[in-house]
Image (tube, rainbow, N blue to C red; front, side, top):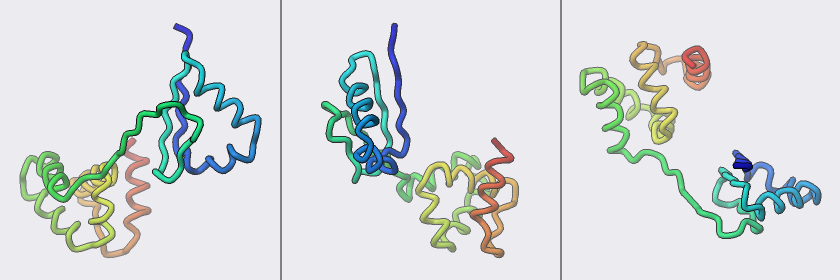
Length: 136
């Protein structure tokens, strides 16, 4: 099978550049019209490629409040750690908002298990990134 899978992650960040670059636009149009090519783009809803023929649209949505509770309970197997993390999230608007994103919620659970989800210094974003990079 002679095919190509083209992944364009964050298409909305380059959509304007494609319009400015005729060669890039022509290449992308060629890729979209070729039956042997498959293209997957991720984008915010505001950026669409008008020359994609019959695109299949999927919306990735974050966790709802009950999903967050269910995920935390499953992660900690309903022990005391789950209620401790839920309290931390409910007491910090920023963390609560971020917890609707599955990757962030996974990191919060990991950090909570490591007893590193301290919110007093206000540098939780840096701590999340450093912990994630060390873990993975």
